[in-house]
Structures are given as structure tokens and as C-alpha cells.
Image 1 (spheres, rainbow, N blue to C red):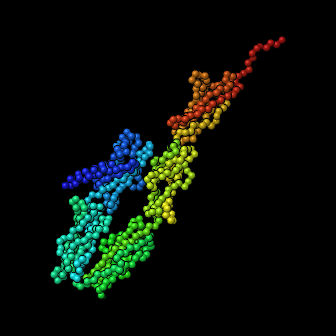
Image 2 (cartoon, helix red, strand yellow):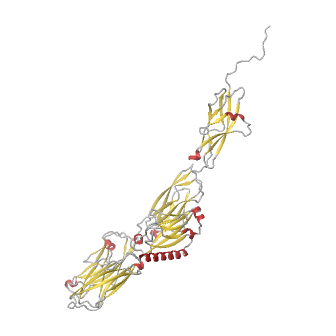
Image 3 (cartoon, one colour):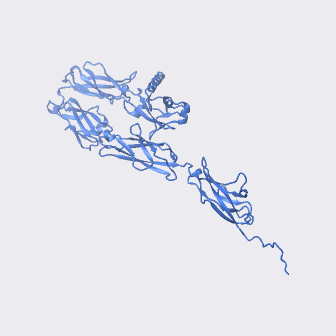
Length: 571
């Protein structure tokens, strides 16, 4: 049976994904998948929906960018298929939300494209309805007239939508019928309605079985036993002085703020007509943490943190009960509308593309994606984002609300600035306005755009004749403004191809240090000056080089004795 259920779920998932493909708009895709599917289950083929073949996909690449929370999906780089990489529990991700959607951003490079992917997590019926108590005991006077209602505790189901509690059943009983009030948002509150007058002398106690069923196929259910104890006399319930109670309350109202005062009266006398107030049985724990109800005066005051972003509207069931031996109770709903206050600063999320930006990046190159959000409502949640510095970068808004791209404004030069700190400011339109800042460090990577420069141009050296062969006669230096291999310099003597300058064959240069060695001894009487050229090249790709002329002058030494050319005769 379980295997047939999994097969049915997979079949529905495939049909849902197929329908989702037809509804995808350009730049934005929507897929659906059921919770609890196995790891590796295919969600959709992003490459196919973008019209990319495997060759194009491999050249451009596709990846998911995200902030601090990693989504439960992965994109296969070979075929662009989006698949589940871990178990998904819809109730854990989205609580009881009717629509559970995980928003993703996928990026294609060269050229840059941003596509928004929405994956809706569909509910499966993996929870049964559950009552807060297994047994509920009611005390009802025999004098209560037919038509009286008695609110019961509602069942809760962790699933949502049609898979939450959909209906209730009551065991057959001639005195009671069941009435269910639909409050929306998966909330249905059951009440017992008295159909036939009770007679304590005939039956002192009635035992009923209340069953809650969800909308699964087959449905899951939960039961609660209701014991109705019949009492005598007190025959007038409390009556509220208003048909409805509604009030407006600012969020962040301080503890002790009076919200509203309710009032009910009872026509009975003594303890049967003395009214006390309490929260209804179906009031959730959150409301009890926020408000206190004075049981005697009916005054509701603030005792917790009122936050519009958590609840914009609260409905609280109030019960007015008398103190008769068999208590009579009347229910009334108080609606509290929360007014938004600008109490949330904008949040900035930055997704950088690379650790370092090449200095030859063209104007308009995207450096990072900026997304901003504000949890407030209306103008309090309207955010503008900007850069408040004169930097070679622009913040351009995206078609998607509250999305920006940080791009280069003009050409960059690492040799002038190797690092920029860009301060992003996000400011809301509230009064007073709230803002936040985030700094982005942008490092420029070197490009081989500078040639080596000699320390002199031209070089002029003087050496004495009769130098020792193999010894360094002079040195040359050069520098390069680039870094790394782009600044690593090698020296080379430029020799004439046709041998026009034969002297260069008697010179050698150390390619690393620039030291020049003479391989022979020079003779001033034979050679007084000569000239040659030296090149300096960096190790970049492609390499850049420059060259310089070297002028060498030979200095004379007294290394020749006098010579008598003609004999002299004396007479």
C-alpha cells in the first residue's frame, strides 16, 4: 500500500512539474514538488526551459546564488537539472502557510543573466488531526433551552489547506447536534448545540465522541470524548453589552497599555448572576502571551511585545461566565487590529561574483548583486538603496523589486588603486526614516598593462682597457609597475642578425640581475668606443618589453712603452 502511495505521489509530482513548465515567463520559472520526496528527485530542467543545449550550458555555467541559508536544491552542471539534495519537511520550512514557496536566484555567466526560480513545496497528508485533550467535561443546566451553544476545543493538524482539519463528526445523540464555525486559515471551531431539553432525573451524564477528519484520501482522524454532566437551575447566561468588539492598537505599545474593556451582565441573582471573564478555550498561546484579561473588570491590557510583522490582526475569544453551581458561559470575539510602526531597519544582502576584479574589466561589469528588504508595511517598508561615495562604481536597480547590481562605472587601474571599499546604504521611507549600511571590499587583480622601464636611457659606461675576461664590467636595472609574474623581468642583449655589430658576441648578460660580462679584454689602441642595445621583458601573457641603447667608452691605460720609429745619427 505504501509503495502504491509513493508511486501515486511521484505521478502527481511529474504532472505538476509539466504544467509548471508551460507557465514559466522569461527570466522567471516556477516549479512544484511534494514534500518528503526522496533525495535526488528532479524538480525541473532549468537549461531546457532556457533553451540551452549542453555545449552552451557548459560554456556559460548555471548556479544558484544564495545568502546565509542554503536551499535544499542543487543544479547539475552537466544538464541543468534542478534536483532535491535533502529531505524537505514543509511544516518545518513554512509552518502552516497555505502556500509554501522557496525563492531561488540562478545565474548564467558570459553574458550575465539572472533568473528567478520559485519552487512551491506541496503538502502531503503526513499528520493526523489532534485534540489538545482526550477528554472534555461540560456541565450543563437542565434548564438550558434548545439552541444553546457550547464551544469545544478545536483539533489541530500540522498539514495545511485541504489536508488540514476539514470537518467534524459527532456520535449519534438525541440531545445534541454539532455546529462548526469556519474562521478561515485552516481554523474550524466545533460547538455543541442543544437540540432537546435535558432531564437530570432521567440521565445525569451524556458521553459523546467528537471526531475530526482532514481532507486526505483516505482522510486521517483524531477523537475526543465529551462528557456532559447535567446540573440544575441556573438558567440565565451572561449577556455582553455589544454585538461586537473591535479596537486599533499600535505595535510596540508599552506593557500595561489598556486595549479595551468588555462588559457582560447576568439577570440571575447572587452567585448565579456574578460574572467573571476569561479567554476562550480556542485562544492560542501567542495571544495569551501578548494580553492579560482582568477576570473581574473585563479590562484587556498589553503584557507582551506587540509586533505588526508577526500578526496584523488578532481575534480573541472571550468568555463571560457566571458563578452559579452549574456555570453558564457566553462567548464573544474581540478583534484587535495592529497599526504598523516603522521599527525595522532595512536588511542588505550581498552576493559577490568573485574575490578579485580584473583591472581591465569593461565599464558595466557586474561586481555584486544587492538585495534589500524591510519587514515593515507600506511606506515604512519602501526601501531605496544607494552609494554615498564618489567611486568608479554604480548601483543600478533590477527589474525585480528591491534588487540592485553593483557595476563598474569606468576603466580601473590597479596601479593607482588596488582596493575599494564600497559603502551600500539602504534607507526606508518611514517617518522617521531608518537606514542600514554594508561595506563591500573590492580587490583589483593585476593585468599585464605596464612595460618594464630602465633606470636610465640611454646608458653610458666607461671601462679601462685590459679588463679581465669573464668579470662583470657594468650592470643595468629596470622595474615594472605590475605585480607577480607580470613584474618579473628578464634581460637580453639584442644581437644583429647579420653580424653588423660583432662586439656583442664578446658580451654576455645575466638575464635575472642585468649584470654584463665581457668575454674578452678590450684594447684602447684598437677600440675606443662601441654601442649595443639591451631588451627587458616581463613574464606576463602576453609579455611586454622595452629596450635601451648602451654606449661604452674604453679608457686608456699606460700599457705601451715608447717606440723609436727612425734611428738617429750623431755627427
